[in-house]
View (tube, rainbow, N blue to C red):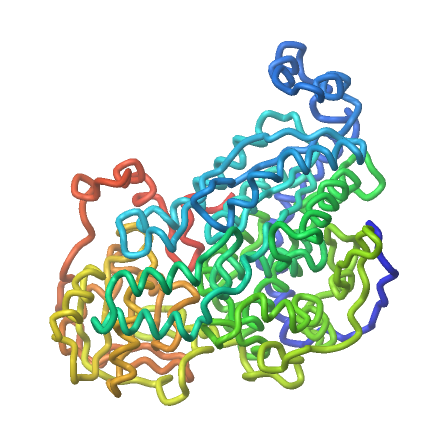
Length: 618
C-alpha cells in the first residue's frame, strides 16, 4: 500500500473498555481457543502445500478453470494465490448495483499483483426499503443466515487463498462476515461501493412521509419525494443499518482506511477498489503479511465495533448482528457488555435519523479518520489490533487521496470540519451512545434514544395491543388512536414467530401523534432498525410472545411504564393467572412470498438477545 508513515500514540485504554474486553475474553476462552485451533491448523496446512487449488485432483481443477478464458493458464499453473470474489450484486438494490463492474476490475488488479481471481459465488441481497410493511420483510432477518451459508458454499470449492467480499446492506454484510469466519484461515476484505450523492434533505423527506400518513399529500407527490431521496446507484444516505455496516467494517479493520463513504463511480472509488484487490494478495499465506480473518476478528475488534456503533448512534439491528458475528469467531458477546459500554461511550455524530445530516456530510466533515482518531485519543478504541492495513488501528487515522494519479494515504491532523455533524470525544453531543438496554417484568429490550427528545424518554400510559402491524395502521387511519396517550404493544413479531420483520412503517403515524402532543411509544418483540427516530421504543423484546414471553399476557388498558433513562420496562398490572392471547401463525398459514420454505428457521432460530441466529454455538 502507498502510504505515509503512521504516527503511534500511547494512550491508556479506558478502564470500562478494558474491563468489558477482559470479561469477554474470559467468557469466551474455551470457544475462542477451539476456534483458533481450527484456524491455525488450516493455516499451517495452507502454508505447507502452497496455493490451495494445487492439491486438487486433475478433474477437480479442470472443472475449476474450464470457463476462465485468459486466466486459464494462471489457474492451471497453481503457483499464484487464488482470490475468491463473493458478490451480492443485483441491479434492484441501489447500494449493490455498482458491484456490476467490480469483478473485471478486481480480476485485473489481482492479476497485476501476482494472483488470480474468480467469482466464487453470489449471495442473495434483499432490500428492506422495498419489503417494508410487506410479507417479504418476514424473510429479511433469516436472509442473513442464508447469506452466511451461501458464502460458505462459494468458498467450499477449496480453490482459494483469500476472499474479496462485495456487500453493503442490512443483512448482507453480517452474513458475508459470518460465512467468511468459517474459513478463518483465509484473509478476507470487504470492498465497499459507497453512498449515492445526497438527494432530498432528510428533514423534507420526513415531513412528506408524515403529510402522506395524514392524507395531506397524494401518492404521486409522495413518490416524487421518495424518488428524489433514493435517486442513483449507491447506498441510501441516511445512517441506518447499511451505513452502520460500512462504518463497522472500517473500524474492525476489514476495509482499506478511508474507503467506506467514497461515492461510487469516482476516480478515488475506482482506485480504492483496485487497491483492495492488490492488498488482499499481499495478505495471503504465500506473502509476507499473512493476515487471516480469524485473527483480525478478535475480542478487541468486537469491542471496537460496539464502541463505534454507540459513538455513531448506529442501527439497533447490530445489537443482534454483532452477537451473531462474534459467535462465528468463537466470541461470546452479550447485551450486558453493550450496556456497560453505552454508559461510557459518548455520541459523536448527528446523522439522520439522529440529526439532519447524512453520511456524505459526515464524510465531508472528516468522516472515518476524525471519528476513529478521536475515539483512539480518548482510549475508547483498542489500537493494538490486526487489520488489513497492518498492525494497529492507527492506520485508520489516514485518509486516501489521489496525487498525480497515485493513491496515497495521509494522516489527518485536523479535527472535525463541521461540529454540527461530527464532534470530538471530549465535546460530544451526548455523554452516552444512545442505545440503552431496558428490562423489567416484560423481559429485556433495546431502546435507541439518540433521536428521542428528553421529555419523551419516560412514558407511562395504557397499552393498546396489536398482533399485526397492519392492525395498528388501520387503527390510525380510522382515527381510533387520536387524542389519547398509549403504548402500542406489537407482538408476535419475534424471530420464531414470523422472522422478526422491521416495523419501520409504523414510525410516520406514531410520529404524527407525537407531534400532536400525545404521549406515545411502542413496545415490540419485532425490529425497528436504526430508523425509529423520535418515537420512544423498546424493541427486540426477549423472550418474545411466541416463546412464552410476558408480552403475550398484556391486555388493552394495562398500564406500561418505559423509562429509557433508568433502563426499566414494566407492565404495572398483575399478570398472574393470565393465559397468553393471540398466537403466531402456524406453518400451514405462514405461506406465500416463499415464507413456507423458511418454516424450519422458525423452529430453530434463537432469541434476539443471542443474535437471532439459526446456528446456535459453533
